[in-house]
Length: 236
Image (cartoon, rainbow, N blue to C red; front, top):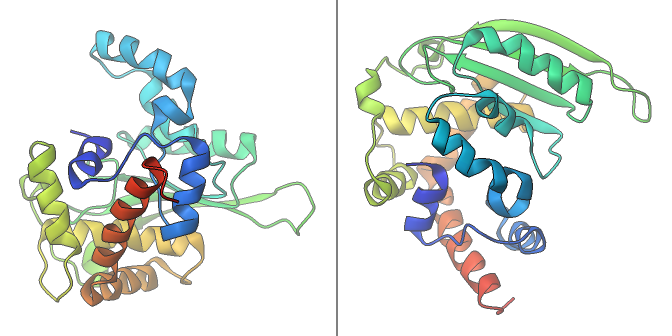
């Protein structure tokens, strides 16, 4: 069960065209870029990947082929040995200004399960000049921002409908929390930092927690569902 399945169960129209994705972002600030639509080549590769039934280079290539040409990126890898490979590829392409590649306790994201290893690259060249990257690798422990440990089973989901309901619960306003909500806070916090909304991951985690507790995230989801459906129905 992937993100497309969950978003579809929530009512988000996931197969918007590139032009429709742009409209959705303009309207509500968020959109989903479905690979088979926004990257036709990936559509051709999909059946081959399923037939293989094992990990292949496409598990690594997929996160790198961002159709939006994003200048800020958070990319997870399933094996820590891939951290320098992914960072080197991003540097060679020279598209990003600030990115982090993450591996955490056997997972391709930061989680309360344990510490994560993060490789960060940042363009330090003046505007208009060829990109020059500073690179550093460090460990980040959720305990340092007050998030307790959990077991990987605490993060387990189910089918699209169950995961959609879990997602709604995570986004609800209020101070309640669990391992899934803590994981959302951690990864959203890293995103806030990489995008430049805060000066540190710790600050990003605080901002993400505050946003969730305010109920703003749940409101954005409602608007996203409405916007995507309106665009698909030609009401925009």
